[in-house]
Image (tube, rainbow, N blue to C red):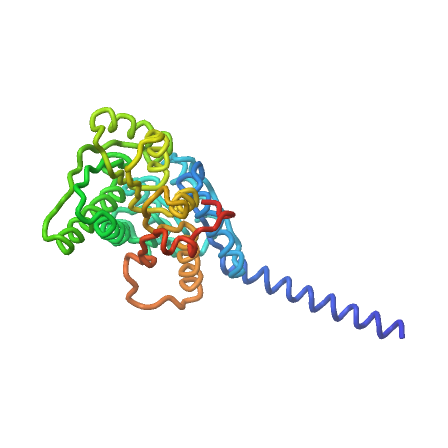
Length: 323
């Protein structure tokens, strides 16, 4: 009996060893590098968490690095991961032009490169850029604003991220286009004026400061449109007890903003879920590694655009989310 048990134990150990060896081999065949331009913000931290989780679920080995908002470090990070034998790269680029040589070198080395969230120069050789549609999200938010304020003349304070940023431009123009189209459809005329534009550097503190300056120059503001939730949440602090000012953002879906929407203190925001963006990119990366990526893939892969309002906020509000 003892001999039988020993033999069975040996077989079980051998099977376990084979399974571990198979898993290790699969991970070696699916090594994914994640290059984040920064983790010093909940949005980007949520992207990294989601990307790592999805890659692990797919049985891949993961290398993740934080460029700390330093272009030179991100270039070096990418070069180092390529040297470590990654099969695919998920990158949120610090600089749209500055990362082109590193991305092209990675692609030339046989790495499947997927860009997330931030745009990159068209000269870069990558598979696809995965992001929410800034213009479509903005359009939906703008149309919601038009419907929510029928018959009202709007004095809009615009809070933007930083000058020259393409993402910010797409977002604000999307909202204004949606608002114009919505008002024309509803009333046959435009009833809004952008009374001022402030620059909030995408942060809560920046939004607060920009709002303070805008209020000083334009005390009759009744709508605040921001290019992300963080700046609008900062603007809310600057407004204090000021009544009858409608807050909305072109994009993000930050959980604090969603709670404010649920509480009736915030109008709407566009869905730009970092977890969905990152997980989608990793899923595509795994398909590329396995040779299962669809032919003729578009250079941009959009997640589904959505305006989050009080009517649908419960679907998206997750209080334990990173972002």
